[in-house]
Length: 356
Ligand SMILES: [Zn+2]
Image (cartoon, rainbow, N blue to C red; front, side, top):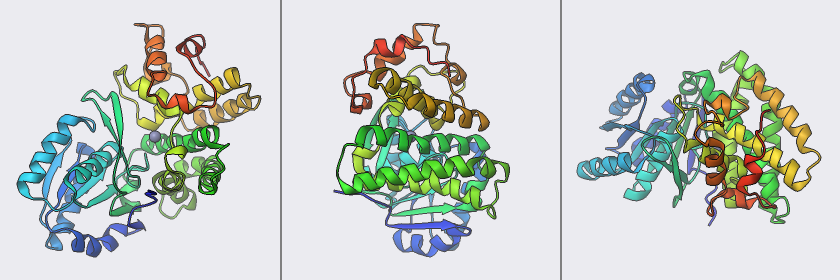
């Protein structure tokens, strides 16, 4: 079954106001899921606006990342109150938690991204982490959200690093899908890969200007936030599982196991994962163009102030056998790294220090 997109997408200036009548048809008593104190005032606005449409809400926040403990607690709260939908307003982990809850409760889900750090508002996937933020598993959901509200004025309030992190995560679509699926002759998969290439090129062209002038009037900014929040999700929707993740996300999942003191954002880790993947392609797959791609990408990432090494993510690879631990987790049996068209062993990772 193809889960291509949310049933309805509202995007742009005043998307939230335009979505309210549709939301009121879907729910009268939703559970609002949020997280950080920095988005609290936006969530209060969302709740007040819903009240004006005679929608009463139960309001809860995640205590940790999207983890079993939070999900179980919110599941009970939603069941006890007979909530008839979930409205998830926040970053990727909040959106994932909202989607998983709605899936478990078999009620509609409305996603309201408050940053452009991820395409989680779009997709029928959710990641489960430990309370400490270690990746555990991803879950395939039975549908994409019922409504996605991608309101420019909400996205604009997010910190700059959420945008740069989202750019790195979106770039991974091309680097991962092109290596895992280029020999797949299915037309939709091929077309999804081409969209991911166009998205990469657009991000290369527009990102610096988007960051310099983060304004709704700036077409570069709009292109970049929509690329991260919408197009990246569409690529997964059209391409299906084959177009999703490979080494860059496998390395991300491994790096989250080490719990650096200051937790990097998802895309910041994925960006480093892309560079390591390209290096593996060069060493193990004799990809002569990989070196060129690494140079191009490192230059771009440095301009955006994105980390390019594991060290810059706050992890000393020489300490505590860290590089070996990353290598072992990356290469565990169920890892996406095995979707690469060549084999990678922990030694291939340990032997290279990957300082870009
Ligand atoms: Zn990702």
